[in-house]
Length: 335
Image (cartoon, rainbow, N blue to C red):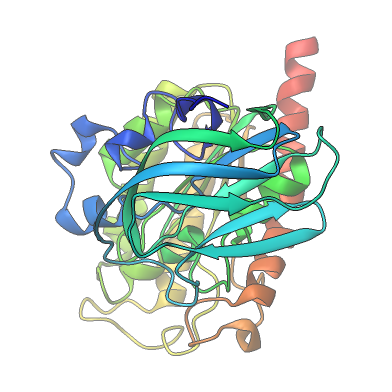
């Protein structure tokens, strides 16, 4: 079989982007955003190939760049191949020129997903099916998730198990994961990228880092959320937006940061800001999901990040609201 351009098979990037750019953010945002956000955007969180067909293996021609700065620390340095009922891992070869990835036995209509390893910058130049053919997998409605390391996928054991991926899989959505570890300040440029994404639904899940690594107070975080939602609505005036406030973080709930705010204070300020925004605009398509009780503290692997069980809990708490928002949108369009 001849080599095929990879773009039709790539999932997990904004519609205006190609993974040959090596970033989950557009160039106009990359030029102006803080360096830590730019570096985190080069982690291919959620980026994968999705295809159907009879091929028994896939050969990838690739180029490898630098190591990424904030990959999920618990993931193996490997490609992860997922089909219904099957997960396999294929490590990067030493020569980094071509890698052949065996595919499990399956029926040709089944979708195969191959997630990129997060620990290095990778550009795939070509895909060659071996022992059969491939075709791009069908796409569901686009769902864009914005958040911090928890949304990016810290600390699941393998790609495809982060809560946004679990929700997308359960609802048949085409996920674009804009989770940025160590970052997520409610950046206006990221809100603009979401607004220009032509998404069918959005989730906004940030605030944990505002307690210590990016400390702020209740007034600033509330105003930042108001501006962020305003920018998203300017680009996507009709779609469902689910906002999830920070999950539990035991060491921060009652401890004050340098500006006198506890995480509990910041969570309350975010939730109040979302309610005020929705009420002032009579916006029934914004849903607030309080995050405190979504993930039990014992499901945090390091006191901050959920493990596999915690991501399942988070997905279970968010998925019904995403589904309801999409159904409301569909109902409004039918009327």
